[in-house]
Image 1 (cartoon, rainbow, N blue to C red):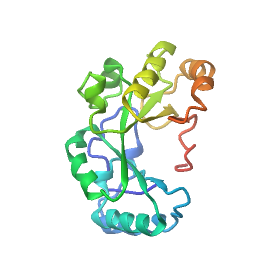
Image 2 (tube, rainbow, N blue to C red):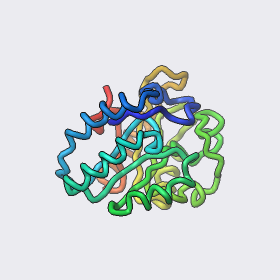
Image 3 (cartoon, rainbow, N blue to C red):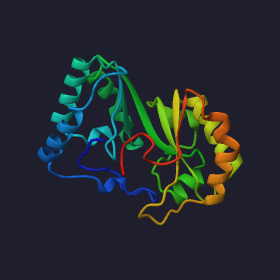
Length: 215
């Protein structure tokens, strides 16, 4: 878990992760250097999380990240970026061409009215193929009012059709007005979790700390 200057968008109605930010790039680098010093390279793969987009990390952190990946034999890197950065991704891939780069999109749902009308995600495309352009993976948010078994199943099926891998996050209580819906969460856990929990292309976070980051 690294720290950057902060999410450039900051308007998602469900998210308060963007509060983990600092405008001082030197302070960010010192913090990130300590965190990256714990990377072992055991799995030859690394997912970089920073409460925003990879493009919001400072230059020194990115340079150190490359160096550590070389030293530790890490071949695959997973980065996340908001759709607003879509056009910058090809240059990032060139810059990290010595590694296999997997770009993850915080999509949340293919349901346009829910995504834009309620969650305020800022992704104007409606077509699934257009949405997935430039991205390899996607995050989905389940467990909120307005979702159903049908809509969640549709999101999973479309996600697997258009991305190499998907990550399903269940809504957890936070400081935003968006609240978890116990009925929707129960429906997911009962009907969909058993079907996808062993799928190698699906990560499921029943709690937002299941990846071992956050508190």
